[in-house]
Length: 227
Image 1 (cartoon, rainbow, N blue to C red):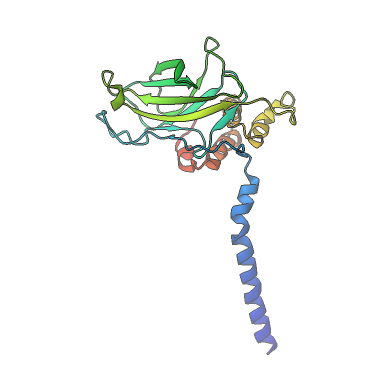
Image 2: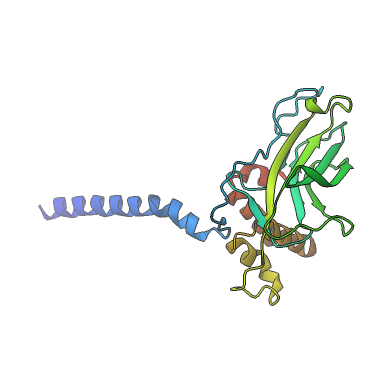
């Protein structure tokens, strides 16, 4: 009888441990995430190009904007850095466009980047973003110069906000990406981490960049690219 009780007890302990390990894993992972989305910014982003319209190549998901899918991400920078992922070499150029409220274009640039992570920093000659304003930015695959409506594009929104007063970002800047991320400032968190990776060129800093992309549901894309 004692052996039977021990057997059942062992099975019960095993089940309890198994349930304990499995159930909290998702919530635990959520707690460990560094990026905390800002409140009140819900808005779907069209962060991937769709199927081919006026293009000769199948360009589905050729461009993926590195932004959260379900809300408008923020920045504290006057001239932030915009990131996207280009999955293949294109014969057609890309056009980056930044539009302020009222549909006025404040910056536009045509470029022919190599596949991989593309980072575009607004130049000093461009109009600075204003605090409290939400801007739309697009990356367009220019397949048809004569018929722009047939071009493919991905688009997202960005809002400039004030620097949080609760955190001192001027000190210990090597961890600025963590503070930005925890304050919901996506664009600066990614840019800071990107710069840190370029400076250090280490596996740990690369993993941190991937981790941020995984937190916005881009794990496969993050692992496809090597700096």
